Image (tube, helix red, strand yellow):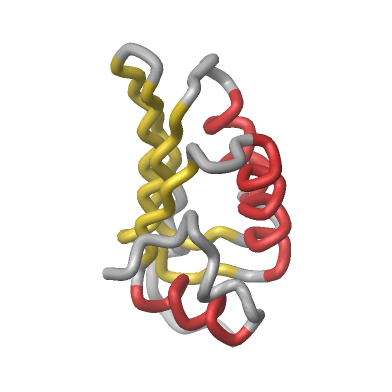
Length: 104
């Protein structure tokens, strides 16, 4: 059913500062966009990564899979800043207590 609105906009951008990479993601992260989020985070060599998901409006199982892959690749050096929607999905999936997930 056509909702009459514009299609959701997805974006993922990265900026590096020394050994710290900050990836800012906005919009819907799903099976069509999760790999782009992952590849954006892996594009630049970095020792620490902050994944800013505060502007993410939808987060599905493909997005969870990409996030878990990042957590495995960067143990102890990944920080995820979730939106309310991302926090809820991670809580429901049992990942809400992970050390990489920022509490706010």
